[in-house]
Length: 332
Image (tube, rainbow, N blue to C red; front, top):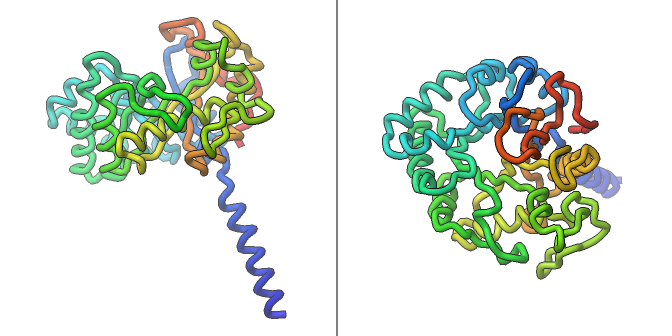
């Protein structure tokens, strides 16, 4: 009986452990909240829309006072960007970084800030400002008693090179010192990961099913790692690049990923729904190199008709401005 009791307890413990190890969507899935659109809902309505859909993470692209006031007390975890235009001043002047933190972080004590993204897909000469700006913002947060908020920067797959994923390395010289700094602070690298753009940039060699998580089997065999979808391959290329930069302990947060529903090749509501639903269902598993839940932010909450750039840029939204779903998505 004692043996059977112990076995039953062990079985129960294993069962409970298994349940505990299954990440729920709300723990690992966020949505990016952009405001480059007409007739978008008020910030308070947007926060309610997040909550009613069980979305517990949000990314905003600048210190949006309306959004920050609406987020206060919601416990939604927030990535907030330092706009690229401000990097130079924050990099050159620690007091400017202290003022930025005071005005945009300390002034909103009810907001659950997780990460400050110092720049988003920064390019050109501004890349020289990323690391010193990160260091000054990090020091300003620490001096304000807010050292638990991690400082990083958001980058896209163009800063990496190499195939298969195990051969990934950084193609930009400024990334190595940033990676090593992140390793020293314990902050993750924020990575914008878009199988859509990889697919449309190389349709001759990439099958649509590989980009949409619908391949029936392994597409890329990389040593002992089998890749059935392009998302995992892109994420693991970042992981290999971090390892090759001497920063193998740095985590990866997918700070943007999504699929447009109109405006370009393979940009249909059906493909957008397939990609985003499969992404939500997949990120709890992790990748071959990094099993376990990957914190991931879908781009974006709304179709933003004022967004500049290619037509697809205006059609990444999960919701229409009237808060109706662009297509059905289940976040749980």
